[in-house]
Image (tube, rainbow, N blue to C red; front, side, top):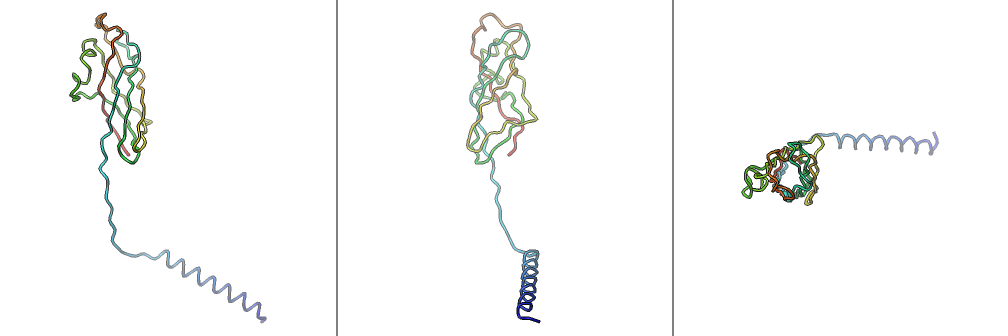
Length: 157
């Protein structure tokens, strides 16, 4: 056998040995301890809740509610539901007083495709055809600005 052939065979055997040693090293199980913490998400804030389209006393959902959702968390949040906030201290069962007087109502909004609010960011949302004015609304409701207080329902990270 020539020196070259011996060197080639030795090189192949050495490569096979190194490969099997590396494979054994990476596939071996071990034990140890670890630690992780989970951050409690902060609540999003919602500003706006303003009806931005004309309403007519038809009992038909034709009004648009515009709002801005702000996410204080460092990770994005996905919102699947926006609902009337009947506990808002500023309103009467979720509505400004003039909205109550004008028979304005809001339909909770649910979406299969979520509204995604970026981490430490905000998202403007327009809820089309979500606001209704009842047929009993007096003429004094014309050209009024209405506020509707909403909150998030189903949210995940």
